[in-house]
Image (cartoon, rainbow, N blue to C red):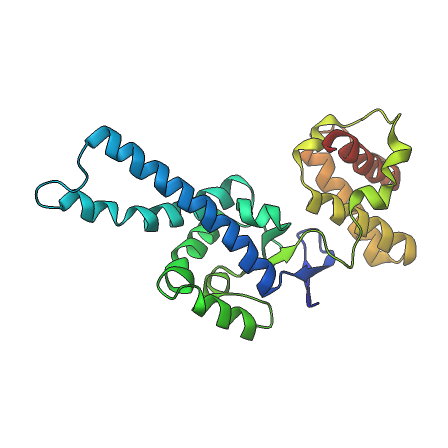
Length: 247
């Protein structure tokens, strides 16, 4: 089990478990099954609308041959943008694309990852991606190296899920204070939990600054009029609200 340390925009270093080649392969198999289904649907609709796909000169059939490639690339680009670094295969395997510098993955990053699928996956049947990921210390394919990204496991064996951390059974009667927190994701909540734990274990100036920074950041994102004085209580409330609203 290999991991990587990523420093977030709140200057907090978090250890993530890197997705293994096996995990990424299974996720890709799921994605390919979905893509094949989409291609069949597109060809069926095209046949129904246009009629004879072969035509007299076979020109339409030549165009049809590009549908799998366009669908493959379009699927990965759109799904990762819409689901913040996840395709349906990655979501099924609890994987996610992240930047190594802790910044949010942007449109240009997703686009680079998609373009390099042509080399990594399509024209090499995945051989190039497999070899590069296996040889890379950060488990990156060429698209990851170009976009400065990698793929992590959200449900790491080294860290418990939020439901385990917060003992969700005890939250049955919890009334959410900040409903907007449901629009965030589990990675954000794990970050909050780690900041709290590190501060409580090592209450030094660095961790106190990290606590203040993340409190200020979430206060701004939630558009609160004033920043809560009790930072620990505020952040713990956010965790509880998220679990209750997202389960």
